[in-house]
Image 1 (cartoon, helix red, strand yellow):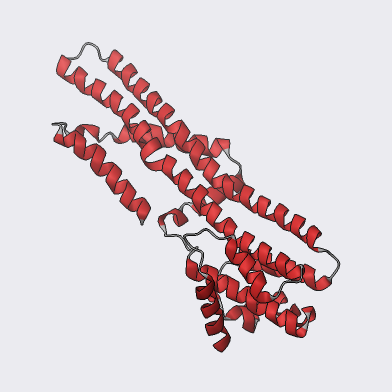
Image 2: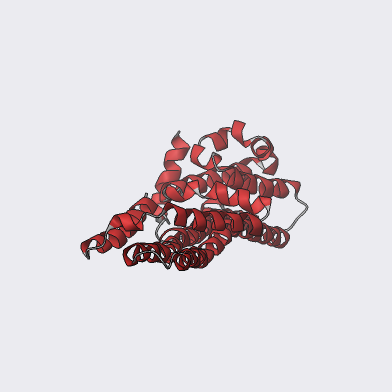
Length: 286
């Protein structure tokens, strides 16, 4: 939603200011300039990226127009789930959760938290390391190193769409210049026409440069920045699970282990100790 609002502000400010200064908006409508800029940018995008990067970028774009799913409520659900799992381990032993982690979608523990269960990446991350804990063949240091490597891989994969969009935005001003040069070439070919018509051709050529810069810094470039922010948010989920499980491996009680996980969250989404405690109590009563 904020993306749409931002785009409306950009369009209203730029085109509104032009109109208020006496400019004619119709003169800025140059579909052929947009064809040259957009077509060249799309072609360069396909040339400069492999299939995986293109697929990841196209899949990431729709999510940019939605609000963040990483809210305080989601984090409280995640930590309540971790508390329930670790409490069951403490009471009944590690083998008691084997069925839960093999088929989390059928598990009574996981099914209480549908918002977490929807995120198959975080569920897979959690169940994989719980499975390693059940095996009992790895110590906390080995698991922590493996977690760090997986989180780093997740971060690198998530950075690909942001990088692709950033490079696309960087190229748009240059493609705008290309369109403008094409317009200048056409103008020079038509140098014998009346000055009034010549002026129109020059104006059309200049619109190419304008459109390339506007698209780069007003529309495409900000999307790369937003993708980076969303990636950092998603990484916090993994870090929360990591810290909580490692605290449990080091012998801390479930309530304290969850407190470790709570502390790594951003302050804007981090629930207070009392809020988390109340949420856990409510989840236990279900």
